[in-house]
Length: 145
Image 1 (cartoon, helix red, strand yellow):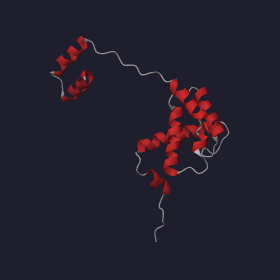
Image 2 (spheres, helix red, strand yellow):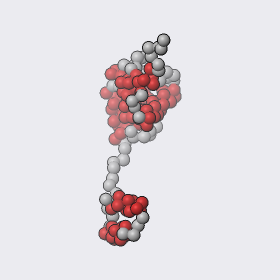
Image 3 (cartoon, rainbow, N blue to C red):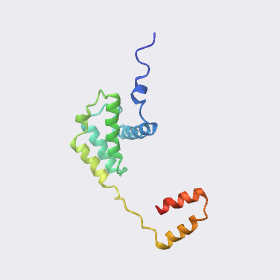
Image 4 (cartoon, helix red, strand yellow):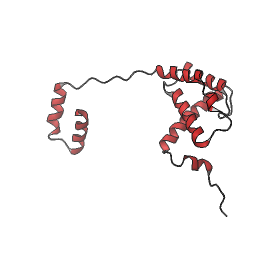
């Protein structure tokens, strides 16, 4: 007789892309390393104060601007797919935790559009595209687009 369940974790994440799982796992791994440095050895057993301290640590250590937001998303993802038992994210992810995450995000450099091509550059690409290979035509077409 076959057991009622085969592999619960595998079943929870089966429909997700491997890149999504890797991205979420990397964020959770980062959180686990910060927790360990703060003396919290079980990364899935934390409270709001622990989580706030970890986010503050990331902010002070000049972590990537989106790392706080990515950790919040990874925790929410894990809870929605596997169901966290020892942590109530509604309590642990407080307003001050979201605020630290937002402060980290605000340190992100704004996107800046690159300078447009000059008339001479556009004319050169249009001239070269007439005799280019199919591959080079695709590249030059993208540049012109």
